[in-house]
Image (cartoon, rainbow, N blue to C red; front, side, top):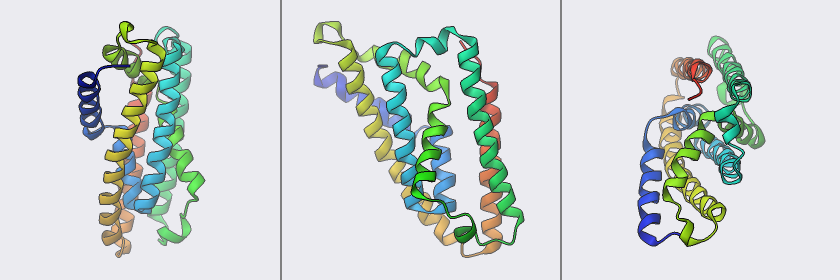
Length: 209
C-alpha cells in the first residue's frame, strides 16, 4: 500500500480534477438543473460506476487496447457520440413542446443511472487518462501494482462522488428556482441540448494518441 503522503497528494489531485470543467461534471450540472438534485446524484453514481469499469480495465492492462487499436478506440467513441446526440434530440424536442418537463420527461432512477454509465464508459479517453495518471502514484516496492491501482481508482471515485454530489445539489437547487417559469424551462432544455450536442461533437473528434 502507498504511503500516506502519496495518498494525500493523489486525493488532492483527484479533487482538483473533479472540480475542473469537463464533460462529466457539465453533464451532471445540466441534468441536475433539468431534473433535480436527486437526478443529478443518480447520474453521478452512474458516472462513478463507469469509473469502476475504467479502473478495472487499467488495472488489468486491458485499456492498452484503446491506445493501440484505432478500431476499438473509434468504435467506442462513436457509440458515445451517438448516444449524446440522442439525448440532445430529446432535450431539443422537450424545449419545443408545450412544456411540462417534470411530468412529461420524468425519468426513472435506472434511466438516470444508466445515462451516467453510458456517458462515462463510452469515452475511451478516460481509460487512457487513467492509464497515464494512476501508475504515477504506484510503487512496486509497496506490493501488488494491481491492488494499488484499484485503491487509487477507489479514491478517485470517492472524490468524484463528493464533488459531483455538491454540483448536483447546487445545480438542482438553482434549476428548481428557475423552472417555475415555462420560458426558463425551455431555455434550460435548449441549453442542455446544446451541451449534449457539443459533447457529442467533441467526443467524435477526439484523436487517439
